[in-house]
Image 1 (cartoon, rainbow, N blue to C red):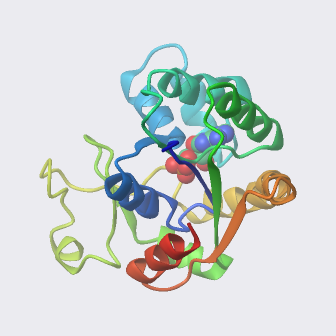
Image 2 (cartoon, rainbow, N blue to C red):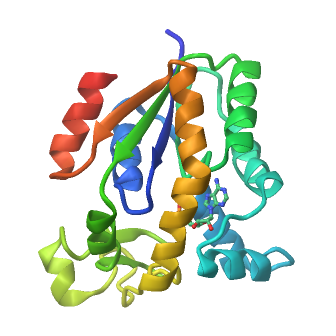
Length: 216
Ligand code: AMP
């Protein structure tokens, strides 16, 4: 059987990370999370770190050549029989076209694009209660996890959780503006290609997963 290649689209905080992680486990997929790769580059320091941090803090997008480099160097190492799930890419039309071309070139033609649709109000609520471990960079929702709400510590590293630098109200606003300007054309592109599945992503995690599984 040909491996499945899943691309998640959605506003920041729409649940892409959570659902991508669930599908990764369920179908033994390789997860490529562009935002996480960029955060690792910041943590490692080096010549790219300052510019990436500045861009992320402003809620902007890093250049297409850099994100393509981030996901491509992972994608080409994955065994051809293993499926992939993308989270965070593509975010611009040009990146979407390059990603589709790369997948086709690698004979990964079974592609599903899942757009998690959710209101701005819900996003603002979710992102204000999202926290990240400064060590392992895992993300948690204080809203969904009452134990963490009390301890505010990473259950794996036991370090105090922090707010992501881009989860402040001003940056969230910029990221929502950028989503409408940059990601809507991506959504339209995949719709035209007949690859888009739109899911109403408001509601409990399990319910959204169920809708995704049914649609696949
Ligand atoms: P995320 O963790 O997906 O919310 O991404 C965090 C930040 O990383 C975004 O707000 C962007 O600044 C940057 N980023 C992640 N993915 C991309 C992408 N595909 N293109 C450009 N910038 C990106």
